[in-house]
Length: 227
Length: 352
Ligand SMILES: Nc1ncnc2c1ncn2[C@@H]1O[C@H](COP(=O)(O)OP(=O)(O)OP(=O)(O)O)[C@@H](O)[C@H]1O
Ligand SMILES: [Mg+2]
Image (cartoon, rainbow over all chains, first blue to last red; front, top):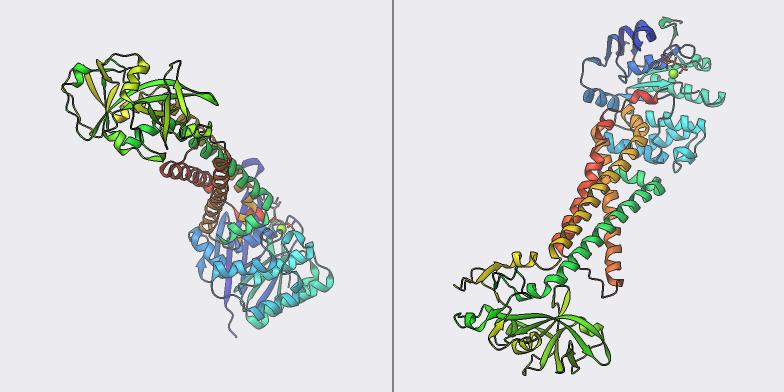
């Protein structure tokens, strides 16, 4: 089976600040993700995992280097096109707070229908997803009425609902117990294997290790493959 | 619109307060402009009801019908058409044993001329004798009725009310229509005087007499006692109110938008185009302003109904539409100011 590259990053540098307060968060990072594979990026807090993931998804631009998503060079296309790419190809599971506070769980999904129009899960697919994640009973609740773990699972469903080619997840299991971690790990793994998606998870949760095809480690801004 | 509406529904208190604020502002503007128009009408109602185009006065009368006098030697040289009417104006206090005194404006007419023939009555009939008068229906609120015999000032003569007419006010006082001879009696003038002036429905009526001048009716109205000053006062009040409400509404919408930036960042991270968010913000502002205006105008209508008849309040469509459009525009401008912020929302801010 030939591999199809979804995300390709070359020589990525990222620095914040100027002059004396300048810090280099990412140094010369090379990274590729394939369809049908799940990659895990681990590293201690503050090591630059979120920064790496947001650059991969086009939310931030790197200081140097190139990012290519499905043959589109992210760093050179206009903002509008980047938005469209995010809307159509990429599902972000953000580390914190990525639900719209004034929409119920059900409305978080129907809003996707309105904006995206096509290519999202059918109702039975959504029902199965909610069931897997154990959040079927929560559809009429507002985000403020959910616990941390429930919010996280709804956020995962929200990101997967548009049926994106690429899923970028930032600490998707931080608020979950081991049982739920296994469910989410298996879910993401299945997405890669059965639906040929490209999954990238950044985390310091080692419980996800068993579900990944590749594991990378970020330390002091540099990345190396761990297995 | 979807997001805008959902958000309003979820944050009822916050948006309710803003709608309430717009309600109060629009209520105030509506009432003020209603009072302004109502008061202005009290100066001009009668003149408007005649359909006057020009007013002919003595050129040294300072454009005042009350101050002007036309002598018989002048008017003998004139030929009046169907479009001209003599009017003799003098302020009077009407007295009647059972009712309280009313400050009014007496207008003496030649009942065969157009003002007299075109006058519409709500009750009774037009005078057939010199001692009969038709009065504005404001007299009814003071208890006057058909057949009442009234006196003017300290004069001995009695006059009988034979008819009521509607919308007859001039110089902020109800009108008593009588005859030109009564006008002369009240002014204690000899028969060598004809009237105070001539009202014409012809904008270009000219007398050919050097001492008499034809004024366009707008000039005449602007010179009515207090009319311009009062209108200017109201105009300034309303204009300042509009400017202040622009600032207040804009500030509120600005704060509202700032508070929503984190939500917008979430949506931007999901790939929602900023155009959708800008649209959302503006349609939300319009919803709020429309809501406030609808409630404000309902409250105004209710108030106008409940106000005692003595309070002059009146509305006309051009004014209502102007005020409403002004407030709507205010809302849109207020919503547009923070648009730059929305366009600049950085989705990365919600990452960590
Ligand atoms: N916008 C920014 N401006 C300045 N410094 C930043 C900015 N964003 C991130 N950093 C810094 O970059 C470093 C890496 O941040 P990042 O959020 O990528 O870490 P992380 O690995 O995701 O940590 P965690 O596990 O706690 O989420 C941190 O030292 C952080 O302070
Ligand atoms: Mg992070």
